[in-house]
Length: 220
Image 1 (cartoon, rainbow, N blue to C red):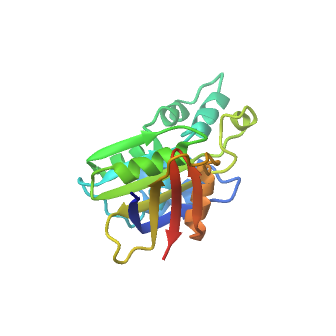
Image 2 (cartoon, rainbow, N blue to C red):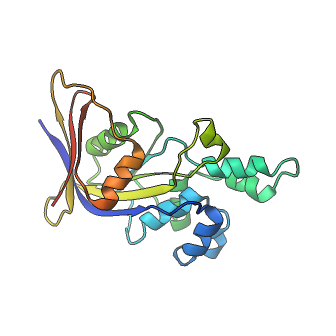
């Protein structure tokens, strides 16, 4: 039995390197309150921009996926030693990117599912969104671009963020996300989070086998 949701909003932030938090604050300043802007991480800014125009409600659920979260914020704080920067310390321990956006909006949601992982993160996030009982689910994801942590394999090589609003209503949908169980399905490579962001940005189909079935994202 196929489980599916329909995509009714999708927006992706793919800033060109070497954009980091300072450049993003200048580029996206009109989207955030000035009091919150200076403390937001690069990932928080990108997620907020991806959610621009989406009116969340307390009945919505949010699924948030990130392998490395605020990697660059941590790097910047550590680089300020031995004269540790109080502002960079605050940024490095600030709530995660999606929480920065929700707190700034003073926006409650019915459930928040924060997910971390690597090889199977996209499957975990999509399955969580498909099984979530809320009528509307916002699927979010993103990364910050690392520097020296990237060299150690603990950061993303690019910054990006995406937001997709998923419902069970087919009318007016831009696309469809689905999972069909299949006994003995071959376990192919699950796409990386950056690959999912690229597919959402270009609205290109994405399909693979794994975790017991067939996964697909198709567009109208």
